[in-house]
Length: 421
Image (tube, rainbow, N blue to C red; front, side, top):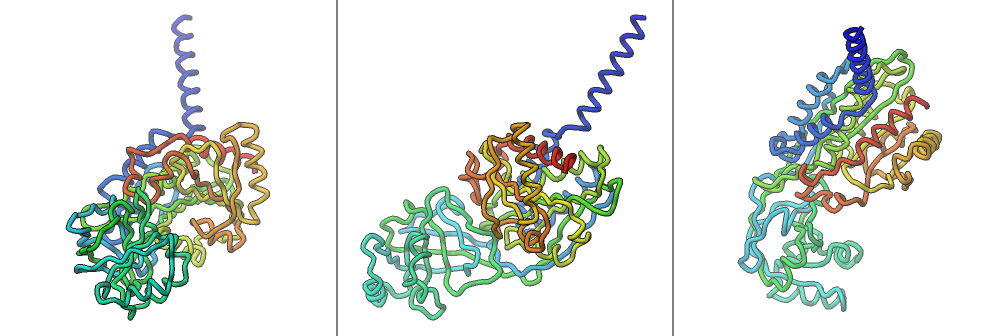
C-alpha cells in the first residue's frame, strides 16, 4: 500500500509539474534568447555585416525547436547607409571613443580631414552674427558646433545644411550616454553630422576625422513568420517584434540591443512555445520583423504582402522594448483595438500585473503602426522610463544591463487576454 501511495504521489507530482510547465512562461528560455541575440556574434543585428540576417536564421531554428507548425522567411530589400569602416575622431589632438564620446547621424556621409571649429553662442544667439562669423577666412569649411535641439528648432541653420554651403559639417552635442539616434538612413545628406558629448567638444578649436560610410543598394533582409495551428482557421492572433537593431559604428563598436529589441523577440518565441504546447482555439502567427530600426521596413512590407488576410486578425500584439522595470506599462492602441484594451485593463485590475496601463498617442514608432493604419485591432507594449531606458540606442543596452521583471506580467496578461477575448 505504501508503495502504491508513493507511485500515486509521484504521478500526481509529475502531473502538477507538467500542467505548470504547459501553462507558464519560460523565463530561462527567454533569458537565453536575449543573451544570444545581444551577443557579439550578431554585431548588433545590423545590416552591413549580415548581423540581422544571421539573427533571422537563428530565429527560424528557434521557432522550429519550440514546435511551430510552419516557419518561413519573407524577403524584402532596402537601401541603407552604413558605418562599418573607419570610425576615428580627434578633438585638439585627443582621440575620442566611438559610441562613448561620439556617434554618427544615420544620414551622414563619411568625413575625412581636419576642420576648424565654430561654437554657436546659443545663450545670445544672433543668426546674422553667426553668418558673418562663418564668412571669415578662419572659419572656412569649419564644423559648426551646437546643441542638437537648439539646431533642430532654429530655421537659421537650414541653409547651412545645403551641399553648396561654406561649412564643412556639423557637430551636434548630446548628453552622455551618447546615442546612435536612429538606424542607418535611407538617404545620405550632403554634409556630415556627428553627435558628440558636450564635455568632449567643449572649447575645442580643431577636429580631425577619418570616418567611412557605405551605401548599400537593394540590401536583402527578411521577416521570420512562424505559425502554430489552432482548432479553427477562420481568424487568428498575431504576435510581432522586431529583431534587427542598430548594428555597427565602425569596425569594432556594435550596439547589442538587449532591450531593443531582443526582449520583445524572445517574448514572441516563448509565446510560440506556449501555444505549441497548449493548442489554441485560433491560428497563431508570430512575426519577427527586420528593418524596423531603419523605418518600419519589414512591417510595412508585410502589410502590403500579408501571409494571412489582415481582416482575419482578431488582435495583434507588438512587443518592443519590454526589458525594463517601470511598474506602469506603456501602450499604444489602434482605434479598432479599443475594445481589447478595455479587456486588458479589466484583467490588469483583477490580476495586478502592473500598477496601471498607460495609453499613449498612436505613433509611427514601431511595427504595430502599419497594421493600425489598415484598421487592424492592435496594441504596442513598450516599457518606457525604467532603469534601462537611459541605455536606449547606446552601446550600454547589453545583456549585462538587461532587466527581466516585465517579461512575466506581459506574457501573462497576453495569454489571459487570448483566453477571454
